[in-house]
Length: 134
Image 1 (cartoon, rainbow, N blue to C red):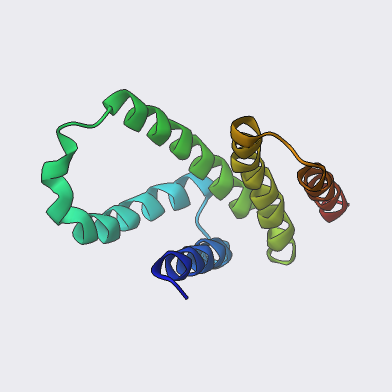
Image 2: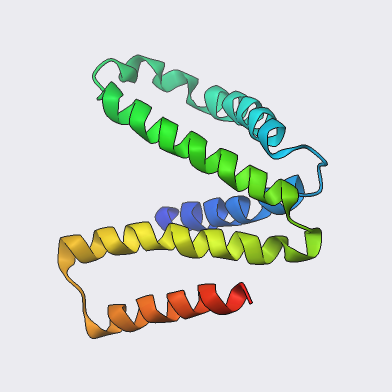
């Protein structure tokens, strides 16, 4: 595996596991978002401290916009996890993932056009979301 693939697999595994664990925490959606953010800040901050000097020439409007969107998504996600029964959390999570996949897929279509195979893939994803929620 390449470094790119290893990072993708580890990220996917971690993003797949933490919500299932958080669902068992007993925290409300809002508080789980706060606690998660504080602990993530400590982990990511300590791993990225050496890059602090590289923030002078960034587009802060883009950074703030992305952060606000991420914050709203995290809050909605954790509120959903908190109110979902343990036996249903995987369905909630898969629905989120399908919606999340839609954004880069549409971005790709707008950048490169759509093929028959991609159209079929979108249809299958929509069907999966529908049937997972039945």
